[in-house]
Structures are given as C-alpha cells and as structure tokens.
Image (cartoon, rainbow, N blue to C red; front, side):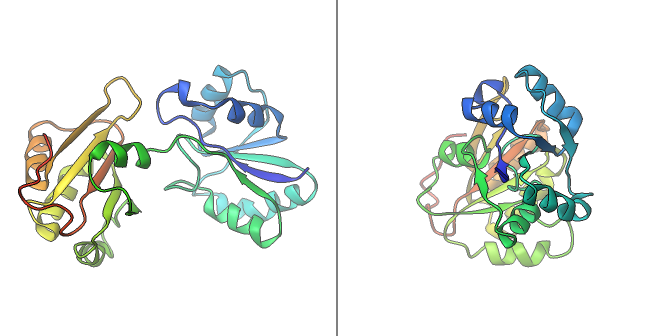
Length: 233
C-alpha cells in the first residue's frame, strides 16, 4: 500500500529508537535520508537493509514529483532525518504537503525530538509555548526578535554552538538581561546538561565556557516570571 511514513530517529541515544520505527524501516520499499552516510550507520546498527536514497534541503524540490509518482504506484516510502523528527527544522514539510495535495496517506510515527525534553527540563511554564527553531541569520532577525520580545508564551529555539553567545547577546538586547532562560545541550548523550538562569548569567557562562554539541534554548515569555523567581544555575 502506498504511504509516506515519517519516522523519527534518535537524537543521540540509540536506545530511543522505537520498535515500530525499526519495523517500518524494515518493511518499506524505500527510505529517504537527509545524509545517507549518517543514516547508513543507524540502519546497519538495527540490521535494516532497505534501499536508501538521499533527500535533503538541496535536492528536495527536484525530487518531490518523482517521489509522488512512486507513491502513487503503490510504493511505501519512509522519510528520516539525521536525528529527531523529520520536518522539524529538517527536510520533510515539502514532501508531506505534496502527499496531502495528491491524497497520498501520510503516517507520522511518534518519537524523538529535542524541543520537548528541553522544554520540560527547563522548569519554565509549558502549558503554552512557541517553537521558533533557528532564528534568521541576518535578514529578518531584528524584526523577529522585536516581535518575540512581546511574546507571553514560553519560546523554544534551536542554535548552533558557535552562534550561541551572539544569540544570547541579542536576547539581552531585545528581551532584557533578567529574562529567565534554560539551555539544554547534548540531550540524551553522555555529556547532556541543562543550565538555567537569566540571559546575562548564561551569556557570561558560555562566554567563559564555549559550548559544544546540539543546543536548545528555552526562554520565558514576557512577564511569565518575576525577577525574584530565579531558576538555579
């Protein structure tokens, strides 16, 4: 039966791979991978021998039409990214949208993603939140930060280690030095850590201790916490 399966993969700890994810990847006709070298190691670990094809941000526009045709011809396809759930700051949205347009069934399996553990670990309000992913690098960055400075819900960002201090400096400028934040690094991995405090405190910390690994920043919404309700650093 033709169907597109969106299959999350571990963000670090291989034990987070689900039984169902392994089963689906073993049974589909084709697996689309963001980086076939990275995914090849994962598939080898779980003894998955399904055909693998590259599908990433640089070629997804060109391959979608052919993939839709395969799906229409009773081909079962699974989409995976290097880590986490596809389409969350990774390729996947365009193909999913095309499948919906052509009435092709899409089945997204539950599984690993970095933003939810980071949010829960933060200790910040999580009944309502906004996921921003990566901020614009240049164009539109100031406009986005000005808008988010007024956001009352908890805000979640992804950031690369070499840009973290620059982003925290911008948070000081637009959100204020005393805004409460939490930074989770290397989630599920050996050196996982979560550090909490004000924007200024964490800027000072990471200026003196350059970060490594994948980073999730969780920022309290405007007026969510008073200046006296500090989180432990």
